[in-house]
Image 1: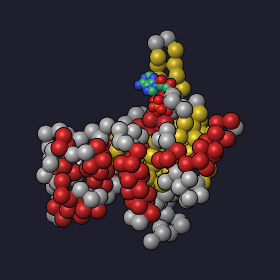
Image 2: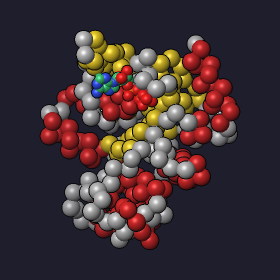
Image 3: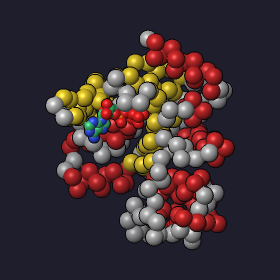
Image 4: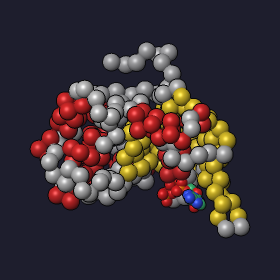
Length: 249
Ligand SMILES: Nc1ncnc2c1ncn2[C@@H]1O[C@H](COP(=O)(O)OP(=O)(O)OP(=O)(O)O)[C@@H](O)[C@H]1O
């Protein structure tokens, strides 16, 4: 069901800048970023290496503090939290998925999924549901090294979803997967957005990943240089063309 139009966007980035010291010089990784992501929207963030994609994703997750501007997740300004409150908020309201899966090797799949969730009534049912939803229920007792890359990434997504977060952020989620497995994962991300109403922001280099999004946002030198809606046709050529034009603009 579509959210009411007056629902505030679950993710709002306003005029965000971030500089890093690099020896004697400074790099402006983010240079006045504005980005708003609607509930249930799937946004792909593209850009050349060094354009600021990962820095933006980390800032949106509250993993990197910013120099100026604001980031609001689920209506809350990340800068308003102290460290402990930010950690709690991130665990509960922001789902994170990385290229390298970042699972705990000594824990079973289901215990990895359980990790961010506080012990609460109904948790076992939720774990059952999310693992079934992601097609990994038969693998729940296995440790990560007994799972394929695609299964490991599904466990990572299940872990990200177990707290029912406002947004799901993913940094190159298919980067460690072969192309067939990567496309299966993209199809899953697309379904999470379209069927389950999840809000997704995914950093990628790949047009074959970005084509599953509703909108592509292109970064260049820490700025949003262009954005375009995808046609929904899942056509990588159209994405490549839009991206090429964005880089020329
Ligand atoms: N911790 C850091 N310390 C110093 N400079 C950094 C740090 N993290 C990022 N940078 C610099 O900030 C800029 C943006 O980096 P970022 O990793 O966000 O780019 P990216 O678009 O994600 O690149 P890639 O596609 O290669 O992962 C780059 O110039 C990078 O060197």
